[in-house]
Length: 415
Image 1 (cartoon, rainbow, N blue to C red):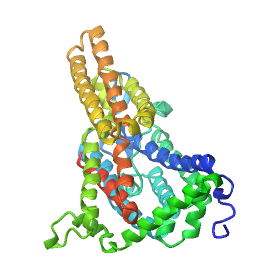
Image 2: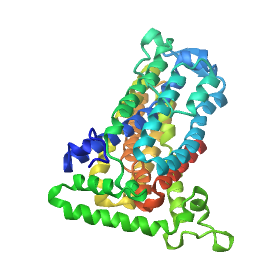
Image 3: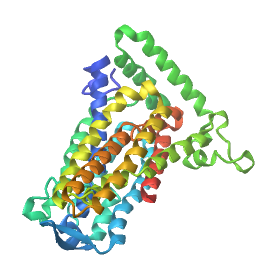
Image 4: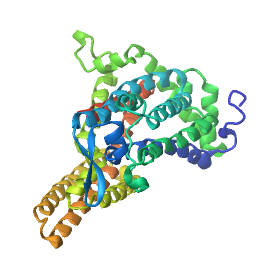
């Protein structure tokens, strides 16, 4: 296949090996996203960051440890919230570019953009500077990993974790062009020979018939969806939910507008559950449960690790139970655990003078916070991100995913 670079791994690997390699690249992108998402709480309480650079608080000595006492919560929250404005605009732009230039190039562009944003934030000297970088990068929270440096006063405490994310971005940028383009996108833009070859390599020579059948299905769907091209813009996708007499319903039986509303509100509900509050303000939650400032930071870090591994539960349950049942059981687990976590934390606060009861209630509150986080990771974290790729037609799939991120941005900014 001369149309594909000779250095592309599609020539070297096939079937399971090729699929694993592609999944590793996708996993690297998800790792980067997860690293960003898991990092905001301790940046807010970093002394150099909060008291000297962003200037929304003063230094306070509590439980033998220095921390930031917030004086301007509006500024603190505003710095974090402006990120979601960036994601709101960026996801729509990324979806549009992805349709034009392909998935590989848009991933490379995103990596470059991320490096620029991370560099701006690493070098930030004030709130305006940080906000400028925040519009280009997701939120950060190094937890307690570097809090021991210079007793928490060093800029290294928050600058290093932000700068560290540049490494996976550069690695992603360096390898992404050695991977095959999406066969569905290739068919959409008329590069059918490349798409057929890639599908053949994914299936293997012994399953050429299945690869050809899959290729024909993709081509037939692409031809069918081109007939509804006027409904492919962001505006038409959103407006499609409206009655025909005012310009809606242009997608006909595809009901694109319904799908857009579904993915937007699924993401909004995902954030209304409260996971952002638990992860970003984990230090405060564990402090209220009766733990010292230093121990709260470490417990928050362990909770994030627990959160990460909980997503593996979905690997074994998601397809067996289905999407809706997964969301249902997640709601039940999270609702019960959050109720108990709040109750036990309140009891810990009421028994400050009784060390044994305070410790017991605090431990129970922390344990159910872990259960809440794990329940979210196994259910609501996965389904809203998976759903858009499953329900949108090929012609608008990238833009459909972008609408999901719009809902996620609104949900986070709202909460």
